[in-house]
Every structure is written in structure tokens, then in C-alpha cells.
Image 1 (cartoon, rainbow, N blue to C red):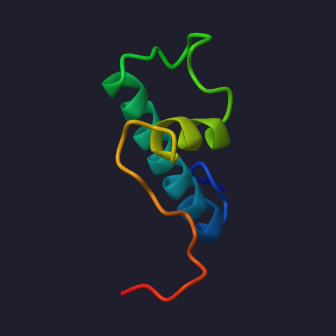
Image 2 (tube, rainbow, N blue to C red):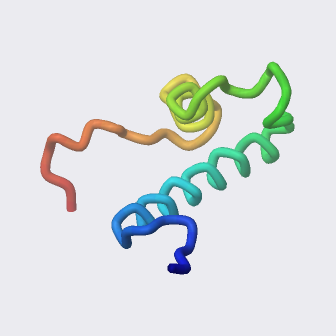
Length: 71
């Protein structure tokens, strides 16, 4: 039996999405001059989202409240 990285299509799709999010966060590190392997880099994905896209960031503001109707 020969398989790729994931044995199920759902897991493979989730891996692609996770990899794309990782790439976006790493890109923001490089754009802001932060070495992703340094102690200045966020410790986890939640910290990275807050640092790079949060309300206290100097980057564009993201409204994470998705409970209301959006057009």
C-alpha cells in the first residue's frame, strides 16, 4: 500500500489549510523583521494571530466576531 502524507482525504485537506495558515503567519514574521526561530517570535499560533492581526497590531484590523450577518 502506498499512501501520501495523510491516509484520508479529510486529513489531507485539513493539512493543506493548516500549512497555508502557517505560511501566512511566517510571511508576517518576515515582513515585520521577526526571525520565526527566535525568542521574539510568537510561541504559538494564537499568539501569532494576535501579534500580527490583532486589535493592538499596527497591521490591518481584523474583526474576529463572526456572530453577526456579513455581506
